[in-house]
Length: 154
Length: 165
Image (cartoon, rainbow over all chains, first blue to last red; front, top):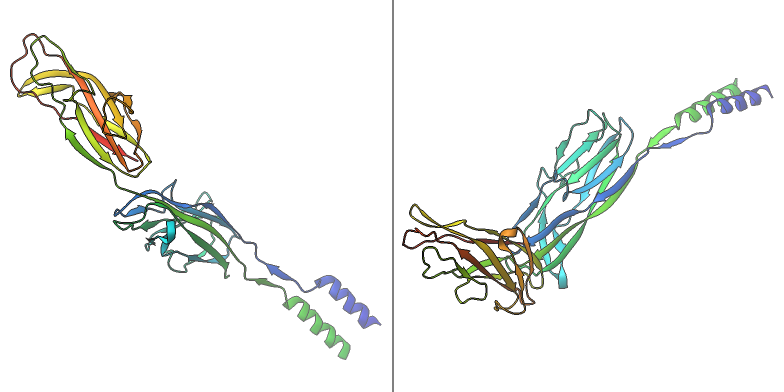
């Protein structure tokens, strides 16, 4: 009987087994907008374009190690099945913490870079890109999705 | 002792299972673009005052046969903006002939007197819209004011028009 009481007391002290799920939210803030594109003329939007670059943000916990992964299109889809090539360069990603000492970090959105959150738990992520319309590109509106995935790996 | 061992083992288990699970989340934006025809501006006709006389101002209206004319092609039924770089003088060597009072008229048809819109080229950016076939025409007039002692000769200047979406 004494042993059973001891066991109950220990369980009361240590609590039930717990599984802590890390906090992570990801949000889409702004489309990557090329605006008007002239047939036969490439157009580039840099990631630091304050109006036209694509923008995400995520919130995790200070000290987390996070991995980025983008699902990037190779074409934008236009009228009647028309397609327009889009590409992303090795410096077309920028991650910018929102803390007072945060500095922007350039990364390759084609890869899966990892970062440690050291100065801010809220990070803005910008992406640029380049479209290459053909000289006979069909006129009209083109679009394609860009998905940004954040994984806490440590 | 046996029971105490069980308690200790259970306690260890309870303490050991506290862990952090990997978390993953995502969001999606769109990449967007609007493809349009390039704008091509062509100089169709010079603004020509012909013979002018010292002390007598001469005006060429937009509908005159010698008004300046540009033809423009672009994306059908799409808005664009016109801007001009205009001279203040026509020049003959070191002699100037003042030019001003600019007038303009843009149209979706090649017609300087009906169906279009009057505007003032010197007023800054002016909106226009390409026709359903992607055409527009722009006509320009002005007034030259020769001095009484204006030196005789050929005077020229450049009128530059830029059209952008």
